[in-house]
Image (cartoon, rainbow, N blue to C red; front, side, top):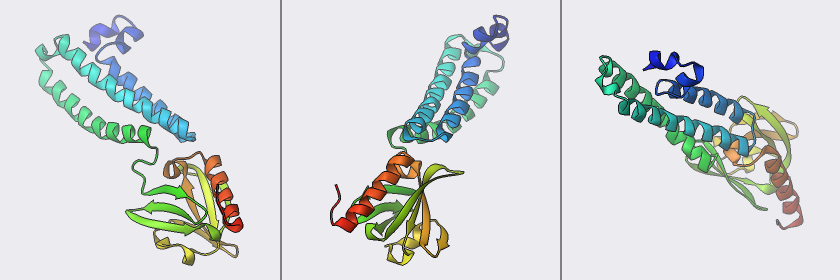
Length: 208
């Protein structure tokens, strides 16, 4: 099928059962690149492209069967390869589908709520509460996991379950941990603003 499709040119091959998985692979790479640029909207868009790539893989399989691929001499080898591919892609599909619904999906750290009393987190299966009153500052940042916010607190001793957090720095001003957009489910700028407002409200005795 691939040989006959190639004779029709690049687009003919791409829009054929052998070509659709290659188009899907290109979408996966594009989706990863978009996700790495940050913002919740782009993260969802990148994951959405990968979900669509999985759909193309399934369409390619059904199309190949409809075109008589089961009658090929290479049907056993082709079926095995396709089966292994679908099995691996299904795992990615479930993960990416979860990200589209909630960008925090699959994260070891998840921001739950921000109030005048606490910044509530779910860290590796445990509740962690950072008293808003000990927040000393925030700063936009980026690391290998993406965009996020450095959160400076007076001391980790005041954090309930604080040993679970990924502390990255200790200075005279206090101690710092990092929250990514994936973990917070918020754009870095929005997260920084909400944390700053919560800290200010904690000093004033109320949070809106």
